[in-house]
Image (cartoon, rainbow, N blue to C red; front, side, top):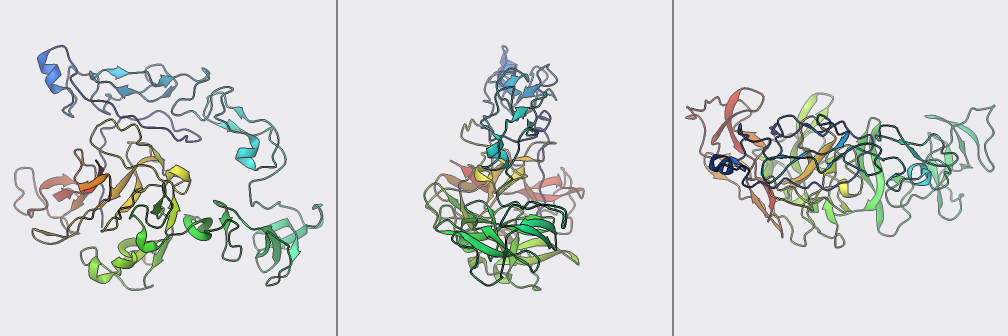
Length: 450
């Protein structure tokens, strides 16, 4: 089982945004920070000293909010002083981190863009700049949505009628399942045993095995799991064995990815596996890895793989405190949307398929993460490690300067202390508490951008 230990020294960001906007994460530069020699030597060493206002992401708990600004991201400058340049106030018309809008600045949102192309009206901004208000929008509906009705009392526009289905009553245009009866660009969908005409979905829209996809090269791929089960969307498929290998067969600028937390395809329904013997238990060449999945019997290990799709991706995070302007935040609540997908855009494949995910990074902010590609080899015996995977062009498989993720030596805790690590093997050189008390552990290697 993979145990993750995330550093809790990051700044507690201001209140969650009601609508997360894609923003660039500019890391604080770390250099000399004090007028005296001692201060200059300590600034940038990763430890918050008494003469420093901040160090890296550690701002002693201060936020834009606590300093009198309503929104934004408090940073630490090159002199280890608090920098409020990225803080702002609601009502100044400038979008800051934590704002979905600001007065008349709606970030381009319209009723049509939020609720569907046929929707009319005007979007407005909430008083706290946290939400886009759509109360005045009228007509239209989200793409693919059905119009609910009440049998016997609702009037549906022709040629639809009020039809009861397994999930409710809707205005539908009846059709005969299995027959071509809906005309060009439409198909007959099964809505609980009843046929109903619907438009063939386009890229990014929900789809079914029956619907197919309108756009050339698109197929209906399971991309995330809802409370009611897997949900599929129209996207460009790539081989599951190519997931995490970079560009693969995708067009330039896209990467072959499987969405973190999305549906998994099992190699066999009942065969178990262990992480240490993954190479022999699972068909790794076909993209299957030993993963912990939830079943009726609880958590079990199965050989499983995600469904591959081509997507634009968010660059990988460095974890070394350097300034990486192009490193973006990824949205962990909507991992299938646009740049929220994480991956490597490179024509050079990863030889050991990396697990590329949007992982939690900021303490207390579960919805926002950073993109990480795990390329770690597996320890198979004392002192012996499978060679780490290649990260393709632009990245190297290594322990980052400031590691956040760690692996225990064994499923059963191997106890240790800072002074006595005699029970730890050569590979597991750290004594950490991963939630079970102090135990032998090692840092996880990731694809570190060059």
